[in-house]
Length: 169
Image 1 (cartoon, rainbow, N blue to C red):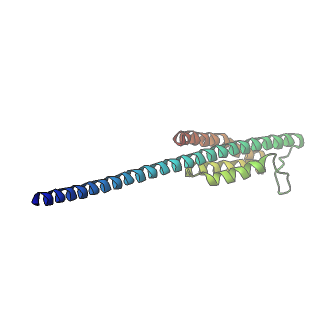
Image 2 (spheres, one colour):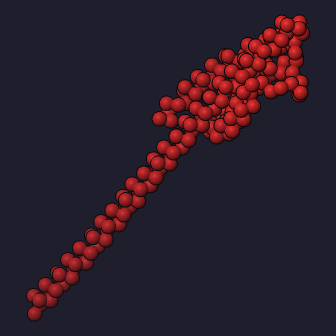
């Protein structure tokens, strides 16, 4: 009888130990799966963020290029008028908007708002200001002064973009 009792106790202890080990293994497996799921979620989130930033920065770069192109075209027009008339045709509110300016400016502003990098946003704002100051200049000398800073500023902007983009791929 005592052997049967010891056998029963052995079976019960073995069952309890097996149950505890099984429960522990399942809990650990659940934790690993949760951790893996969390890491996967973070990777997907980071990928989506990087894609969003990359697209936003490239859109901003295109808008900046279009804005500068529009400013240069308008400066060329103003210089041609100045040569014909002998006077600098300072822009006023009634002056027609430079070709492509509004579209580029609106795209610049909307895409700049989506860029997280403060340095890139700041450089975009500087390019916008200098380009605007160039075409709204009151004289040829003033336009020349403002436009001289435009290309170096554009180079700094493009360099900042070039430094940032590799980290987003």
